[in-house]
Each structure stands twice: as C-alpha cells, then as structure tokens.
Amino acid sequence: MSQYSPEPDDVFAWIDDAERAREQAGLVRTLRPRPASSLLLDLASNDYLGLSRHPETVRGAREAAERWGAGATGSRLVTGTTELHAELERELAAFCGFEAALVLSSGYAANLAAVTALSDRGTLVVSDAGNHASIVDGCRLSRAGIEVIPHSDPQAARKALATHEGRALLVSDSVFSVDGDAAPLAAYAAACREAGAALVVDDAHGLGVLGEGGRGALHAAGLAGAPGVVATLTLSKSLGSQGGAVLGPAKVIRHLVNTARTFIFDTGLAPAAAGAALAGLRLLRREPERAERAREVADRLYGRLTASGLTAARPDAAVVSVRAPSASAALRWAADCREAGLSVGCFRPPSVPDGISRLRLTARADLTGDEIDRAVETILGTAPAGATDR
Image (cartoon, rainbow, N blue to C red):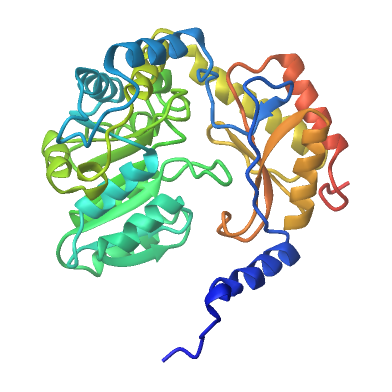
C-alpha cells in the first residue's frame, strides 16, 4: 500500500517536484495565445497549403455555420450528422481513392477509432517506433498484443507478423511528423499481404502534399482503395480546417460506425469545420499545383540550411527538421527566431522518439521567395553554438 498521505491542502505537492524537474531539463511547455493577425512569418503551423485563411475556406466555414448552426448539437449517431458531413465524406473518399470515409472530431480521434475498432485482445498490432502519439495511444487502448518495430523497417514488420496466428494489423504514419521522412509503404503493404494482415496508415502529413494533386501518400504508393488498407487523416493541416477522417472499404467504415468509441460517444465535427474542410478540398482539387509547390519550398529550405552547415533531415513531404544541440538550446533558438520575426516549431522530448531536440519548419505552399530567404537568414543568424558543422 502507498505510504503517500499528504495534508488535505497539499494533495498536489508532487506537481511542484515535477515542474522543477521539467525546468531543469529545459522541457517546460507553455501556452502562447496568438493574435488574430501577426507580423510573424509562420513556419510553425501545419497549414501546408496556406488554406486556413484563404477566402474560400473561410467562406465555407461561415456559410456552414449560418446554415447549420455553431455546433453539431450531439453525437453523429444522434443529431450530429448533417448532410454536409455526408457530402464531405463522399468527396474525401473519391478524392483520395477509397470506397468510403467517416469524419470525426479530430485526427487524434480518427487514429484511436481505427486502431481500437479493428483490433481486440487476440489481435497483434505491429507499430512503427516513429508513430505519432495518437497511434501509440490507440495501441494502448486497443487491448491487443503490441509489438513496436524499429523505425521504417519492413523486414522487422515481416518477422513480427510471421510469428502471429490470427488477426493482425500493421500501423504506421505515412510521413513522420518529427523528421518529415516517408514510411516504406509499398514494403509494409507487401509484408501485410504475405501475412494476411491489414495495413492502417495515418496520412495526416501526406494529404495535400504527396500523390497526384495532393491525393496523399497511399495514392502515390498505388495503395489507395486496396481491400486490406485503411487510411486516417486530419482536416487541420493541408485542408486548413479541423477534424479527422478514416477512409477504407465500406464495410470497415460501417464497422467503425458501430464500434469506434471516439465516434459513437463524441459530439460530431462542428458544421463550420466541415464546411471549411470541404471548401479546402475543392480548392485543392482545382489547384493541384499547391501540392508540388509545398514540396519545392521544403527542398529549398533544406538545401539552403544544410549548405550553411546545419544538420537537417531530407524532407519527403513538407516537414523540414533541423537538429539542435540540446533541449534548452532548441528552446532558446526558437525564442530568438520569434524575436526576429519568425515563428518555428520546437520539438523536444518526449515529443521526439530519439531524444534529439529540433526546430521543425513547415514548408508552406504560399511562401514567397523573399519569405524563404528571410526564414533562412533568421534561422542561420540565431543558430546556437554547436548547431552547425562549420
């Protein structure tokens, strides 16, 4: 039995110790409310295509709110499903090349839904070590047997699947959010076919950037619509809105409607978010060059920064990850960038699986050449000692 018996007014005293430990390690996180408009050049958000403030996306949100109201009013199985949700699902599935889609309140909820609804105690779930926290949490909640394999290792996946008799699935990001590297989807799919396992892929960072016209990493790999493949994605990155979705065979989607707890017991996605996502999707379909532009910007940022001596991972999509000497150095570097007018992401443990802190840059499709120059100059000009190899 625990010996911890604090005074009634000191029940959370342990939090003080935890806070001190975070401060000493340079791992304190704080909320920083941003104004409606800012002079900062934004390379921190996930607004890959620059659609969050596009007039058409904003108009889609406004018109949906005016027609359907501010909230969904309930879970989607009660009153939370509107005709707008169904329209968004049809167009998402058609655009990405899948039979059906199901929209949820977030990409996090979509991953929890897919992993938990497609597994049980007798299932083996094989998970890439670089997977997003939402996949990790889905694995934990699934009550399945979990085997974490080394990052982007198809042979390890094949070996893990071969040891299990019964239902199995392999779960992976398509593009990993820390370094921006792409998963070996074709090899993962081959391993799944050999073992008779399902493949579940989180395409949050692939939609809008990879594949023909931004149709996603699974489309690029020739796996969209395959019978044993399920995709999850978010509406909050390339589409400039909020929410998530699961795409796959129609029978998989029907199964999620009946079994996925983050769908059944959650209020439906707000109409404004559904309207904005639908407008963003239609804009991407009409302007497919935005996907290629995002990749071009990523390549330019990577080339300029590494040529100047910084260590960065070669981007496979729109994430450019620049390594920092330490967690405290990364935090100071990001703060110095902000003071110089540039907003960048700062990834530190536990958000990074390898324990190496980074600046994380978003290569937005709407960045101009001058803005790219300004970003590079600011990052180089504020780089801490030990960040470059020169």
